[in-house]
Image (cartoon, rainbow, N blue to C red; front, side):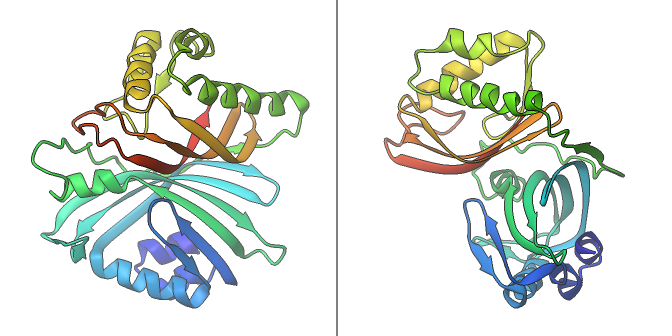
Length: 261
């Protein structure tokens, strides 16, 4: 129903799947409390974006928790952080971690989207910023179910060790040793897919140079099939260049989610 509401530009239908006191927390932005506020928020959102289409690429299920990986396309119609719409096409990946209550309504959603990608696509991130290509909306998702086995839970420790090896900037061997030879990395710090251990070493150097004092504060972990999903807050000081962004010497706190297979 939420997908029908979103793709049909119907705020009321979208909000109908949330509990009366349901909460949407958008990483890096705001928190929307209650079904009425969610409906109003979506009404305003549809004034900013039009011709919106969303599809799920992967769905993970464990008990009352759903993890939804999605792709959204649309056009920038209204004003977004001071940038006026020109019907510029936009599109990006996103992920929602959803908890459902006993009545079958969404009690909470932690939503992660590539806002930086959108700002680049609409020209709000500077002339030098290279926008990521607009991804195609998936026709149907792959569904991954929890097995509930002890072996499944061990995957979380592997994932947490990967993040821990990024802290301090002196554990490249530990980081690379936890990765498969044909590892692929994509996400927040990659404008393009990073492949293989050589790509991983390059990422390690870039990341630890940018944030030599990085710390990952884990807030939620889920072991589902061959996957470990880790929510955390990355804290540190921006001391080195990150792509085209020069060091600011300022502290950062980035809410993020990693999916490890």
